[in-house]
Length: 179
Image (cartoon, rainbow, N blue to C red; front, side):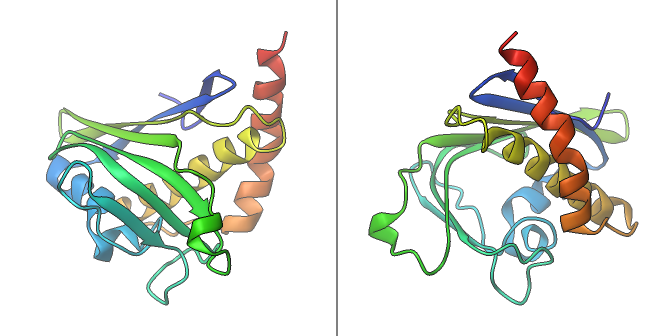
């Protein structure tokens, strides 16, 4: 299993990672503010399908201060195995009514593999913009490195440097889709 994501097409990227278990612990890192803030954003993911999701990347608790707020709606919630919510990222200075529609979809699937947990993350319904989709791939790859570091107790990489180092790899992968 490679840490690299794979573009299934110009609108979907998928990652598979083997993380240390148990599955309930990994689930907490996907849904509870105190754990989410260590690798993605601050806020709880509601347990109710149809509930609003609001995860802030700007609070003092967030390890990666890239700015912005993630808005969406819970589409699926089956603890501790699968979670899906729509995703719209906007800067905090951007009025909510001007934010893009939450039309992309982020899905997390967890499955036990011995003592470990296989995480499958799929981000779909992306706009097929050649400048954006490699950044989505490199962004998730970097975020998943932070998640893995939190779960294993090791030091996470420098976010901007690691992200920038991955961009060429994901740009090549997207370019190959056109051939």
